[in-house]
Picture 1 (cartoon, rainbow, N blue to C red):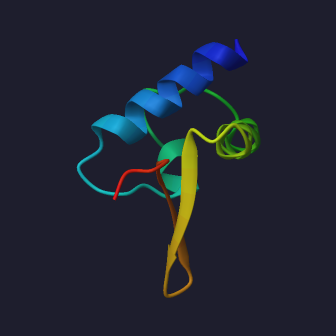
Picture 2: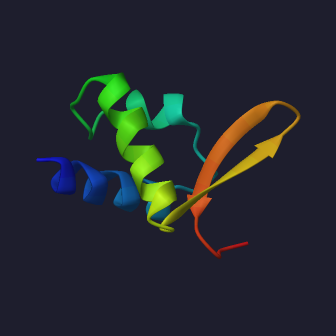
Picture 3: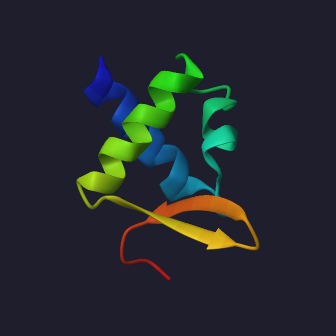
Length: 68
């Protein structure tokens, strides 16, 4: 289940027209899971090097690793 959710998160971030916050991802209609689980999976994706955190003025967003 978690691998499927990770794939959904990656697809959402990849296809987004803007950078997404963890809250945006947790509220996404396409992903049905507890927000705490989603945040944990985001952290795992960051640790795996697939996503990166980026911060602007106190707001933290996710982006695909290595993508500007």
